Image: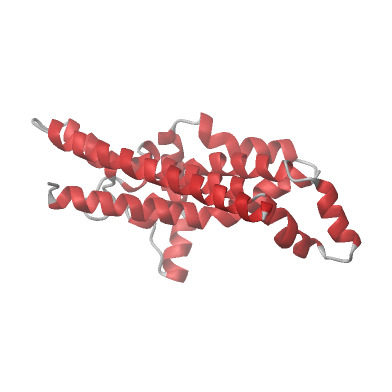
Length: 228
């Protein structure tokens, strides 16, 4: 059986991971399409910036978020005063940090999927008079659907296990920002926490496997529908 603290950490982790994946998905698709289909000055720089969280220490990302979105940060102060939104030391901040850390994985998967779409199909739709936006939603997006699903699942899985950026930005507050990873870390510091560590680790494994299996099922269903 799980303790109330462990149950709260599990529920919060799923909440943060879902919010991070869904909130970043539109931006991930837009950036992936831009990198896959457009040539422009600074494209290499944008590509490097997108993938920067993969090579930076997560603590650095978390500290940068704390400086920018903290209570004394410029962006954080604007959000707080103008919109009443506080990110530092809140679960929403954990979702933001997790979304940023998983963003490169999402963009990579979606970009590869868009690049695999036959451009002649897009050109044919444009020739028939479809505007670019309609071509994207009726041709590109449906054909790139498997990669979009894969990107969303990767972002979810990354958010579920994110630790360094989140604990730096939002700390580990019970009931507010203590996710699975920070709860496991806390149990590692306490005597006799081995049983709790294994319980939470198995839950994380189960959730990740379920997400991967669900995405595979969705992709197969979409492909069968496309063939029919």
